[in-house]
Structure formats: C-alpha cells, structure tokens
Length: 340
Image 1 (tube, rainbow, N blue to C red):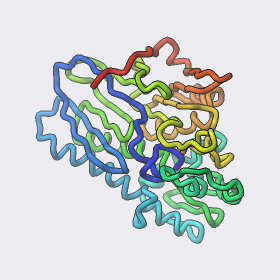
Image 2: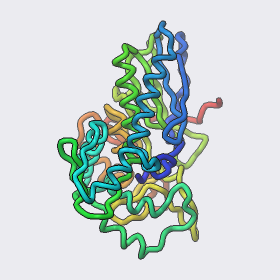
Image 3: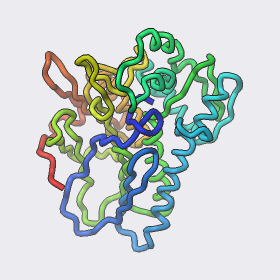
Image 4: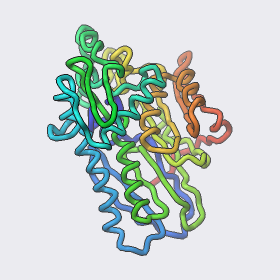
C-alpha cells in the first residue's frame, strides 16, 4: 500500500527506524537473518538449549507464507487472486487474509478512511520506489473514485468489491501481520523470550534471562546521527512510518510514498509517526494512520484506543516539532546514535 516500500508497492527495506539500543547482556541471544518481503528479517531469542535451526525455520516459514499470500507482485498470491476476481464474484479466502482485511476495515472506519487498503489503484499509479515525477493530476483524479473502504466488503471469509477497478494494497499491514505470525509460531513452539523485526516492524515477548528490559530507540526523521530512546512502555510492538525512506524531489518539492487516501497525493500533516501497541499488525496499521491524520487527529485517535502510544514529528511554521501521547510524556531522551 502506501507505506514501507519494495514489497507490496515497493515496501522494501525500510530503515523504519527502529534501532535496538545496546545494553549489558550476560546471556548471548541466538540471532538469524532471512530475506523475504523485499527486506532483511531478523529473529532473535534467548534461553534456548535446543538446536535453534528448526525454531528459526518455523519463524521464517510463517513470514514466507504471509509473503506468498499478500504480495501484489506475485501473480499466484492470494491478494492477486482477490484483485482479479472480487469485482465479478464473491471470493472465499484463507483465514489469514480475512483476518488482515477485517482488521484493516476496522481501522478504516475508526479513522474516517485515513487508513484504506483500497488505495491500491492510486498507489500503483505512483509506482514507488521507481517514481521520479508525480503522476498527472488528471490521472490521479480519474482513479480516486476507486478508493474507499466502503467499496470493499469482507465478511465470514468472503471478499467482494462493490465497484470494478478496486485494487487492494496491503503494504501498510502485511509486514506487521508477518511479525505476529512468526511470534505466534515461536511461542507455540515454547520459545519463552525473543524478538522479530521485519523491516522495522518489531514485536518482542518474554523477559530476557539477564533481567535487562528490551531497549528500543526511534531514528530521528531528519537527523541521521540522532535517535530517540524510549523507556519501556509495557507495549511489545512498534512501527514507524516516515516521509524519508521512499521519496523523490521534483521542482523543489518532496514526494513520498505515504499517500493520503482522500487526495491520492502524499500525506503532508506529518514527517514521521511511531506507534507502540500490543500487536505488530495494529502498530503497522496505526503508524500509517497517524501519519496520514497528523499530530492532532492522530493523537486523538491513539488516545481513544486501549494500550497504544504514539510519537509524531511534523513541521509547523518552518520548524520541526514533535508531539506525544499521554503515556509518553517525559519518557523520551534524545541521544546521539551509537557507533556500530
């Protein structure tokens, strides 16, 4: 969709910006990386005396399955099948796809359409990460009537488009869902403590054997040598959406890949939005939603949700500013990024 580029709409290796901060460790974690969904995936877990290979295979297989289901670049994917057929007939789909689409629709309604997986017709026109010039205004206007979550019907594992030409893009939810699937696979296998990172969509679980908390930082959206350290919020999942990973400059203006479904153009109310919550799926969705809504409406939405916090950077009067949700007040520290 309109986020994290290279995979579904070029949602590739986004440095979304979540950096693991160093901490003293008396126990060395097992760490493996894997290439999927157009990016590098990292899985880390602690305290396992078993051969880590089969456990890593479980996690990566769960992520690969989401990739094969939800990539718009694979003709044989479940998403591609739905995009081909759902305007002409009701399509019965797999439980994972139904779960993702129902969650997407929930947040579409909650946000007044600021999050919308039907933005695909327009996001495909922009063609990030290959875009170098904006599409003609007339072409965007012609496709904009095809964007609208009410034109997508999802119920009881069945999907239907109310209008021909609807095109779904799951780039702002698929990676978060893949993280949750990998975590579920590892937890089911009895792994007590670990972390999964798919292109900056992060979720961790359990308590590390050394007693140290998981320490995570957020990359500053404009200063590469600065990061924001965040105290433990008791929320295990987080994701960031920013205007600085996929963009081009044209006639002095920055055009990025985070599209506002209401206009078909890049959203302009924020520079970056980071959301902490209980699942990576929701964090993935909400970071895009808050980015599109901007600081005021975005933080109002987060405040109305249980177990969610947000940090939003934006420009005001030519100055870079940031605002946080209530649970983040006084819990940020700006620091120089550590050297490798």
